[in-house]
Image 1 (cartoon, rainbow, N blue to C red):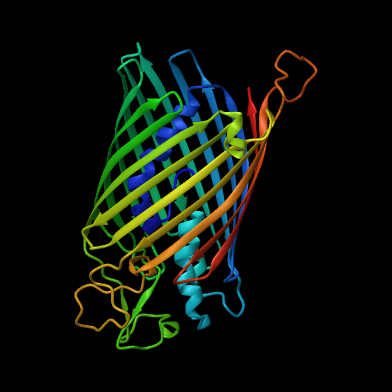
Image 2: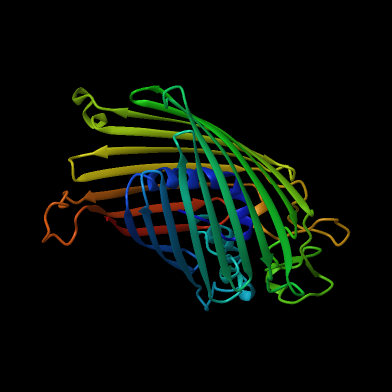
Length: 402
């Protein structure tokens, strides 16, 4: 899904950011291409997020390439019945977590903050130094009405043992400024992300990956978009600061650790039927942090070529997490830390979907062909969450090889 901006989501998933960037970078060096994708995330609380994504990769020579990606999120909430923090519907408040988690957009709009627009620009360069080490440098800038983020990333890759083993080391720093509706002015947060991973070819058809990431976050850890109901008052009454509606107060730092393992296997024997010209990808991730949140993520993907032109992907992901040590359903005024954020609750999610890709025939030698090479793709996914509702996700995209 690319780079993620939303404060809690970005923090929670920053331990996976390198894996996404590294995969994209590996593809980027292979060819020149342009991508256009359109997404619709439709939630059952009336919120809809529209996303347009554009990306361009250019190989300058055999060792150097550049990459630029821009995407815009348009968050359009419902203004009746369920829409807005004051609407009296707790599902809407909880669904703000789902909006952020599945679309990457801000929960401020879905939590009574009105409409919002997020702009995100990622630019970078990769270079291979005489087949000794590969270096990738990226800068990601994201901005919306209540949040601004700047994230430089630097990654090193080294192939070993006749390129059967690849070692990856990475570092990035999130420099965020938060200015939520329930804040006096703006506050800053800085997050340092470290990643180390190894990819090992086990056979011509099988590869395995392991990885570890460490994230250290300091500063204003809240989103600043909600008040905390004190003493059991209704959350819908917390539209202004009062004796029974207080500011959120999070710990001033958060340390995260994540451990990843995965395996990819390609099947190429016609006797396997549906597994012929197919591959299966499995990944597991265990996460823990200094707020006592523990999570497990398991994901499986199945790819199947029906012909040279048609490719199908089926995917399923399950996620579960425990609550933070300071989470309470009914906070009291004497609590040192207090929050109404659904991000720190115990919950689980499911995501399942299908993607279909049509690969155009290679027309590079045909001067009259408008499309020389590339693909057309469409995707549908369904997302459910135990503490909120659900979402339908649609995507259509065009990829052109230049």
